[in-house]
Length: 322
Image (cartoon, rainbow, N blue to C red; front, side, top):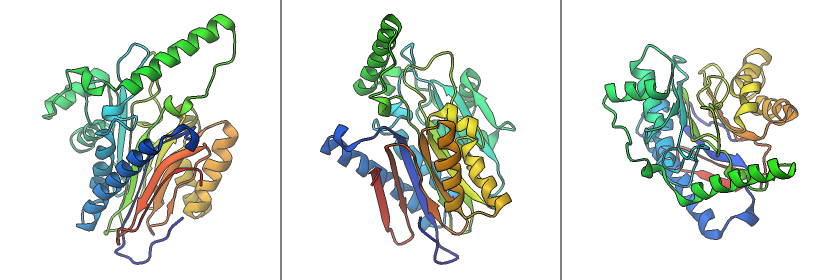
């Protein structure tokens, strides 16, 4: 955990997903590329904050960088559904007003976080889904991605084929499903920030789970589960197995522990993530920040792409459980 030093300090923390992320499974080249992109994301958010911009603009800028990269399960690098398509979720929350914009199950949006921002700014609703969300996007000047090849990456396509093959093998042999590549099954990107004005914000976006069916929606767009921000407590963005994050209401649980039990951010994150969420059977983690600039990045999985940056550009980027 790191702490704020001065009243006009600012800070940003990000994650690029959590799971079975092990050094032995990662090439030096891929590790370098991921670290570079996480640093680019931090710098994008930091630049907004340094110039006096708002926390909500900072987290949006940081997340867009990761959505535009094929390295993460969001935007361009989104995983495939069972049918071979893409369905993405995103959420943006302002800690000042607790206004929220969220979208779920969108198929033709290059940057779902930008559509979530449109919902926050221009809709009387909080959460829009599917075709309706895309109609709203067009009505507000966004261009849809008609060529789904934009989202195609060979790596993600092979993940889908492996997942389908494993399911077939399990069904035919009545064997337990092999989870050896669960680091490729799901993932989320997110950011939390504190600006110079003392305001908080959180943003999260995801392509969901590889091989998902039936219009499955995860925790990302569910307020209080994968995303939450309140100036009175903290801002949180979660990553991991969405079904458990939703059941735990993980992001809001951290805020509630701070508000009702007067816990510090570090204490609340430890109880919510490392105790309650873990006992439930959940796998994943969060990045969180409070109004004093304290940052926590706990996770119970083998690894989590994560990092933070301070006003003096002091930063830290980590991948593995170190």
